[in-house]
Length: 104
Length: 250
Image (cartoon, rainbow over all chains, first blue to last red; front, side, top):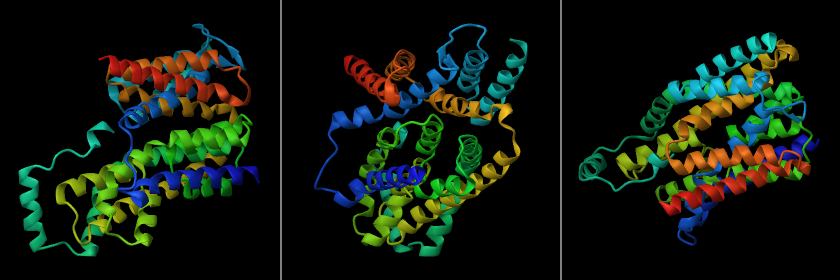
């Protein structure tokens, strides 16, 4: 039930954001400062999700070469940097995560 | 995303525009052209839809809810985030606020494409707003910049948007099907940070972007213990401020 509350609320807000300027054109203009800030939103939010996912294990900070999530994450970042390919990043990152999980 | 900002219309394309007025494409022609131009992008989108489907099940959603979310929210990154926060039993208000912030960038697309949709009926504006994803915007805005506003130009946008919508629904369903076969011990939830790494790293092209990502990462590690997952919003806000600050100094 609460999943549906979240789903409908996020869906409605997303739709209204997409509709905003299409509906209200010429009555409001995006302030330039707001536009500049928007560019940084995706990388800020996504990085803030990634870091604890690879840096924490069982709710404890674990920044060590013994942490397979951290090592696999760093390897995946290198793959993403050099290939710019989503599928390769996921495949190699996941393989590293499994292999390191056995080794470490 | 920056490359997609509308540039000045070149002489050549405004000439093409006036020639185009003489022999305007019909609605079905525009519709199928939109689908055709969207196809290469679908190759990159389909794996995301599948991963979303797999993750949604591993987060404990039932297949129907997981599929419904792809139609109701219809925005990849906030669906991934919603699923992740549901798994961590985050309070629903925090999930809604975070989802809203992630999707704020669509206001930028809305403002950019609005002048081309001004003449349309409310029904069209509503439909095209629902279909205004990153990938449909990218294809539609390029077409508007090439051709200007033509009589049936919105059918091109509709074709591109509908192609993306259909492939998102189908790839979600495939992911849900696969997710049901995979045991939890495989740790497929780790594909979430990997997916985000694949999105963020290639987008870090300048100093301001790199500072944003590093600030967000460090702050998120420091603030992880904050209640209600507020650390996520706090870290993101701090990082956006850092990015804007670095850019302003240059």
